[in-house]
Picture: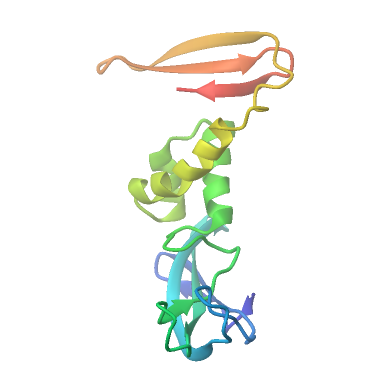
Length: 175
């Protein structure tokens, strides 16, 4: 991934233009070498820089399968930068989880820092959190836990509960 042009200051933050180098790519449906069909701009949100939201404009390559028998007509390149149809970079999704976990920030406050809606952050972190919850080793080495309950808002009677590993002083779960 390389810069595709100068970074620009967007009205609400920073904008970075990136693109991948041209390479031959096989069709994911049949494996035949595909024909390049230009690029499309895919807008992603990344972690804030200098206190401002960052928008990454990825000039994503488009391809057409030349095999007439292939059911897959066209497709776009994949990259570790973002999962298909995501609005946040993978790095931004993990950053959001760390802010929520380490700084006890709300999803809404993380969304404001990223310059996106609450639902965008939640959609990006839910599959990652599910993968973490399914890890059988996530509680390895924990033999003593402490449970803290806090009243978050008295008028609505909202509570926050945290489960901590008392030996390592680490948060195990928050709810």
